[in-house]
Image (tube, rainbow, N blue to C red):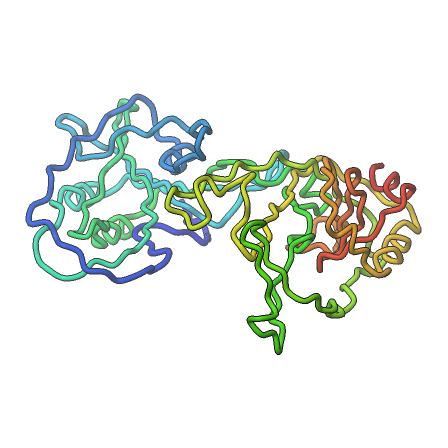
Length: 381
């Protein structure tokens, strides 16, 4: 069968070279365990994701995979299946899915088995590079429907032997297909040209540190008892007007429900800012801490004629400083895309509006204006 034209990360792929550091190379390698054999064929939708460590307190996305290792006595493979990460996606009636590339081989497996049987490399001296390698799962299946995960032979530094991947890639491919893994964009969001996830402008309410020319150390007043530092007030620097969309392009609003905030891990006990300097604690001196408000797509609202023009007119007014710092909780907001539905999605919409809470019309530079109630009603649909 034909080979898919895809962009994939297969075999020994180096994502990033972080640092070169010396390490001791083991003189002997531990014995390779015998693989665990399970009933049924491999499932690439679960296989490649099973090793990902979930967030603390979250349930694993898939059952843990069976132990990988050498081929057990009496297990005769008739096919090999590799589950590889890919940048490709799969579109269907439900929407757009992330995918894994499933490649199957059935011929000349003796060459592959010989490569997998090579012992791990040991000994020597030198340096090991701190590489993060994406190693695809490689499954072997038998004629009676059982399967096992094969262990790749490794180098003294723990990386897979490149020759093993070369042997596999030289074999004739029996089948290659994309396997759906998780839904990343619903059909409604895809058809409307809305991102599945969105957030309020990240600069909203976040302070910046400005170097004040001519400021001398004696000009800074520190009150250690109150834990405050005061500097002379300086006029705010004028900002360039924000970029605004063409009103004729605003024909719909993408509506998002705000996601609950993620818990912040506590700072280490030796943190310079004290124990537990995470969520709810004082920020580091000289910084302003503010989490980004994000949301998940729920629906699209078509906009009546004239609404786009009024939104752009309101967004063109001077920003209201008090609204920029408003911290009332919002549960729903909209983005206003200025591209055709179904086209590639912008990473930073020029206009966002809160449907409750502070009720602001927000520009991508962090500016905020009051959103008139009749326009809010039009955005709610």
